[in-house]
Image (cartoon, rainbow, N blue to C red; front, side, top):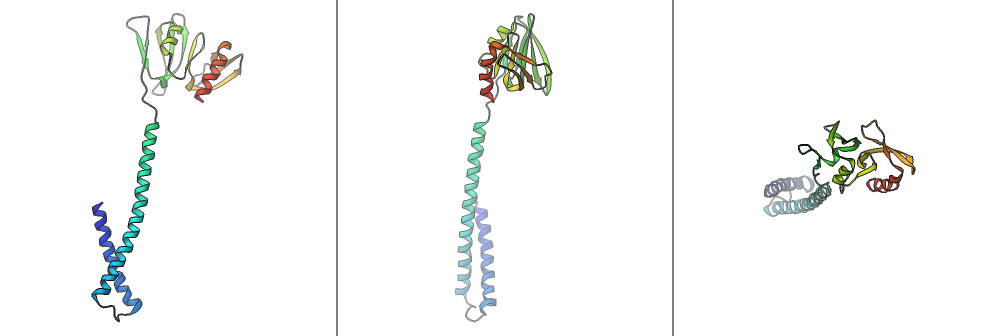
Length: 198
């Protein structure tokens, strides 16, 4: 800030000298060739210059503090960091972990549950020995995760479209060709949950 003030002062001093000599051209040299007139030219130029400098500095300061305030607000409103979900298996040496945003859906397959996860832009299947009911309990409390059918748990944030009516829906998910069913007895609660994330 001190360097800026010194630079502005030097520039304004130079402009004051210019104004002093411009006066000779506008008014003629009579009565101007003295220290008092020279000092007045410098003084008025520096004073007017600092008024403009102060005005624009105040505007710039206001803009910078407002931008800083908006940046802080933007950072405060960003989503909190995700915590990994740990899925336990009925087998002691088997477990699965992923972030909620990676989870597309899970489907029951006999004594196993198949997880469809989006990992580095590629859909991958991970199988774990457990029941869909137990997996539902493990996923309980995670926003957007919903059991749509006795065999399916879906991440509602990944639903691209729904087809059907209150008798039952079919869901289209990002990157998945298979349509996921919503059972008739789940239709109302599905709509309530789905509308919350829209």
